[in-house]
Length: 283
Length: 288
Image (cartoon, rainbow over all chains, first blue to last red; front, side, top):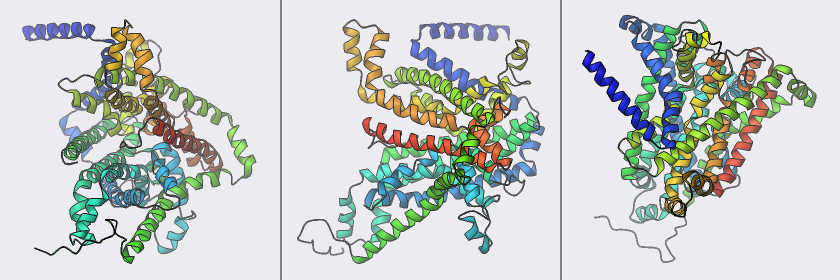
């Protein structure tokens, strides 16, 4: 035991010694990564691992928490799918067609990345409320958006809109129109041309964009907390649940649900990286 | 085998059948309606709501002391966070761009991590680290240093969520430039610092500016992470996005939208600057 410890210390010292021999850019990079990123992540993970496994399970599978994951992930997935479909159409229209206002729309796509999420939530909840510009048209049909799960989805669509459009756009710009024309000349129908010629090279980009959008949507707080009613079992999302635990100084609850969310985001990140590797291979 | 239809004589460009023209306008119509409902109307609404009480209501809301304090705090926190991330971004780009080593891809993925972590979880991590019951909590309390519910916490939260912006934009630009110019400078007797300052930095200035613009927009607009660590104390630790939220929750629509309009203007300036700088940086064909 003592020997292992000694070995560990001596390894650490040699490591630190080699850190001293690193160039300045490396020293800054490691120091910064450690302080800003790794230390906070370690604080969360170690805090979670210091808890009793039974407690962790009880908190992580509490009905309110389960329903919050459910709302977060199913709504996030619906938003990502809608953005996947709409994003392909938007990218196609922006790349292939010429019409007045095209450049303006192209520039507007980045708006969700530039606009603060609190402002997005504010204006979306006003517009989609019963008295709002769009909500007042939907209210007579019995559709309520603001302060419901539908509202959560609208906010998620807004904040993750640019991902699919941008990833697909960049691939579409590189594809040559001639390939489609060749397919068409060889007797393929429009649908066949789309499915057999266009879709295969676009697929990795579409999936990457959908995964990135999904990842952003499930972590989103600012816009959702404003447009949602934040009612458990109805439209309460996991990040808001963490915030509520913190407000009640329930650090254990916040830690467990935060860890669940962290692990899921890491899993999505791995999937995104695999998709991107796939895209490089076939792109 | 299916017999291919005969090739048209007048060149390869086919005038599409009438149904294609129809479809084109159908798709354009869908895109215009979708973007109007999701993006354009919400953006327009910010301005309409802010000026509904006339210019006077707007100006009164903007001279409100809590608002002025929130605006000042947001500017300061963003400035410090962007500066810190610039130092890190340049260091990381210089360290990583021209070197191949085992684990390089992993290191770049680690730098990207903050983009995947929910801002609320980021804030939680900082609370667990620097809060009263956190790792450094007792030590900080003993030395009378406040991090959580104070400016350092707000800056750390902002730094965390915006960390990758500059590193990830400057790195590919450096990779593209190659190392010949730096090597020439070093051979001619320049110190590494001179080389960085006079050769490397000018060569990546547009990419750097581009990433600064994006980083700043996110830093000023960050809500989730800051909401967790700041405590949202009016006139003390309330940033502009938190002010918007508080005003909205308190049914002070005029105040909420007056502040929102400023943040929206920041977003529009960001988009315009991004457009032009991106063009100068020759990034039009790159994917973002």
